[in-house]
Image 1 (cartoon, rainbow, N blue to C red):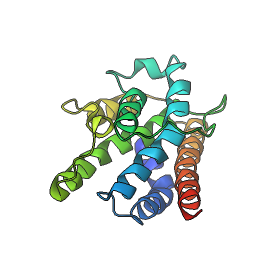
Image 2: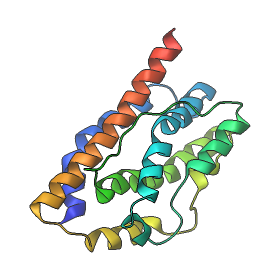
Image 3: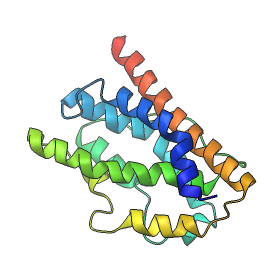
Image 4: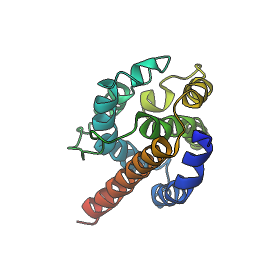
Length: 180
């Protein structure tokens, strides 16, 4: 089994749902960009805190933690870091969670282009974090070296799906808060 292919195949439905949910509000609009950052703020700090405590995560090359950059962007927009949801736990997979976060970093390139096209003058430390480094290639090499037996794949897929679900719940929460 190839872990990357299994993660991609078994999470694509949630990835598509999340993309659709995020795009319900135009990303380059003030509301859309703030919602995007707040969605990440409800999930990312807790996941990165858990990952940074895992010895296996430390074997990934480069500085990948983006919470501080996210906090700077929120502060520049006069937004507070919201309370987050607990996503990761003892049975979580570093590989599964990192897969979702590294995919998010890949998506940041596209989103930066959207902001540039719109001439949107937003703070983008979060989207630019790690720019110029090839995190995806080093992540893929790292992932290929991880166990890919049936149990490891199942745990990674479950963890990745849980993280996608947490992001979807964050979007729903923010949409509910905006409606009130």
